[in-house]
Length: 160
Image (cartoon, rainbow, N blue to C red):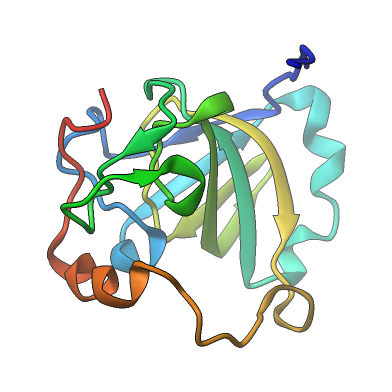
């Protein structure tokens, strides 16, 4: 059963990436790529004290992605259920990026680790806290071999 949910963007991503093809596929592979989040003025008060964090979790709406239940992820050649991947083509098209905050200027957050398209709507921002967010695991499914491809893998058109 599908239950409709309505969300409002709180801001927008400013990025050097104008097209989805050729973009980094994860923030860890784009550690030096700059970007910024422009938080809309009606949400600017929510930024108070954010400069005290080195990393942020940015939740976005992947507005140019499609919705699929099975995909061949960028780091593999085999099809997987989308919930076993980090592919952008997914129901609800929600993106999650962990970025390194470099400075705050009024309602603009400047960061490094950009894997987002210019104009991407921002749904939420949360502080990254290692004691709450990091888990140690040895069971990472197909990513065990897929991660070897990460340094040289850029997005292509397979998610359309």
